[in-house]
Amino acid sequence: MENSSQKSDNNRIIHWLKNSITARMFTIGVLTLILLIPLFMVQELIKERSERQKSVVTEINDKWGDAVIINGPILKLPYRSYREKQITNAQKEVTTETIEELKFLYFFPEQLDIASVIDPMIKKRGLYQTTVYKSEIKVSGNFSPVNIQETEIAEDNILWEKAKIIFNISNLKGVNDQMNISMAGSSYNFTSRFEEVQPPLQKQQGLFLMESKTIRSRDLPLNKDIPFKMDLSVNGSSEISFIPIGKTTVATLKSDWKTNSFTGSFLPYNEHKITETGFNAKWKILDINRPFPQSFINHLPDLTPYAFGVNFMIPVDEYQQSERATKYGILVIGLTFLLFFLIQTLSKIPIHPFQYLMIGLGLIMFYTLLISISEHSSFLKAYLIAGISVILMISLYSKSILNRWKFPMFIGLSLFALYSFVYVIIQLESYALLTGSIGLFFILAIVMFISRKIDWNNY
Image (cartoon, rainbow, N blue to C red; front, side):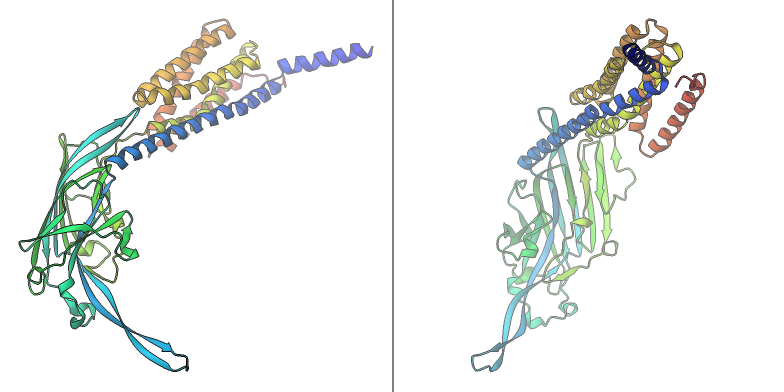
């Protein structure tokens, strides 16, 4: 009797598990949570491939030459500074000693004109590519007469005979020709002074210091404007930018690159800067437009945050879009399981938890196909191939489960609409939240309309 009663209880439990809506919903919920594990693994795979892409691009850029930032030319004027130091001897007698120190003044140009022609090209390694370029840069302008009175330093302490011109550049490796500056007709070569300058000037946000020989007194801006001129040939990658140190800085950048973006604190002022054949951008920046003066005492601050220029980076966003797609993975899995749950509940067709698991793994395969195909093609093509493949696979598999074509066709159309909805959200930026909210509202409304026919008494 006890065995018969135990068997009866077991049969009731099995019958409840098979037919109870609550048990079915609980099972689907557990399977959904389990599928978060492979979905998380796919997200980690995308991050790993993205980091690999960044490391390869960095390696290519490092060999060719990094992004170029230019700051100069700047007049470096040494002066004597004195301070008193008290010394106590063995007899505790205090004496005062005057110590002489060598410090520097830095003066920016009155006028700074920059004209650059940039020739970008694409470098590839395996699946990855980046933008490098060759640039021809002409820098000209003039230094106005130095006003020592404004510095409150005695003119007798100024060492005019040791004045030099300094030039900061971020990419020494990319310099193709000897750097020199012509001042009032005289030419001065630059040499790297990286190891000999004071710590604040050794490296400012990647800027290396170049220094000229001593400037002749006739070429110094003592009581008249002194013109200067420089010609640079520099290789770089990704970006080129300039720091507007002139009291008036005028710059013109030309290139046949079509997918550029202008970066930095200042944008070009000309309207038709981008054309079908490239771009021709012009800047005019005054000293009142930037928050730093025309001269500094003792050291130069980091001025790279005020640079302006052009970015030539290739808009590689396949990994970003794939990562955004995986964030909607739980939505796709949940809505697909909900669709099969409604069909199972309304049609009374049994669906085994293993079959739900196979459907969920098929949905996960969409993301692995997406990331692998997008590395060899565009994101749109990869999305179409992966989406169509998974939709066909799940539709055909559901035919074997549901035994008729009506439901598989409905499932295929629903998945097509769902993947299309996710793709639209991924492409949108400003309206992604609005579109997603409206779409989810309509999906919820449809589910509420369909679920009203379910007999919830069968719990």
